Image (spheres, rainbow, N blue to C red):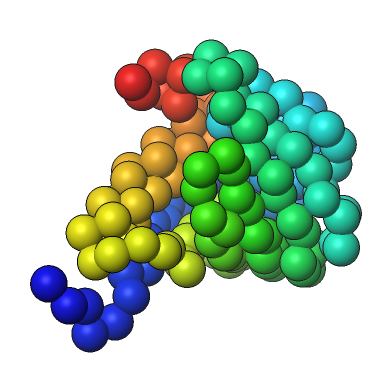
Length: 151
């Protein structure tokens, strides 16, 4: 099978909190660890590399921060053992009533056509869970543990 275009994983969701609060939740390791990964080697800073850890799976990822535009956009490149780097972009769109629409796009998958499609589908599933968990935490203070429970 030959792909005409490389697959891109994209998902998004409204979070009923102000854009500054939602942006901060995604860049601050003290908050993002409440809904996504277990721990981080440090905060996101443009041009820096941090490590994110999912202790429940005994895996980690190297995360290179390409761009930070406060309250608007984060661009990262991440890779982990046995997984080639891909690009991730988070955008934060302020909406009326102090709501924020978060969009996550992950692209740059490698391998043959089947491997790229499988990676993109897995990415959509994972990032959809991340946004849903962020929504639950930011709107209701509930830690869903959906990332930890996805086996």
